[in-house]
Image (tube, rainbow, N blue to C red):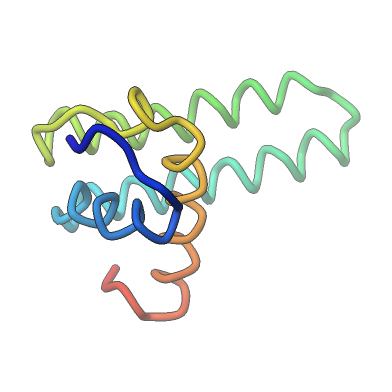
Length: 101
């Protein structure tokens, strides 16, 4: 990994390079979809424990993708904020067809 990135714009190509495997991208997409669902459940039910379930589901799916399919360490370990943002941008890019599902 590079020592640092000056901006998210600079980081995002690196992030995509860490997600070349289609199964890994699909796991990220599913995990992020669970996060959205659990946030909705937390709001509707008034139960904040759903937010914890969202964290477990989101990161669990993503880390399975990295450890078993990408065979790399998640960027979130070194770049937590950029990685978090990268997941949401990649989610949008998959939804809009810019990145293949």
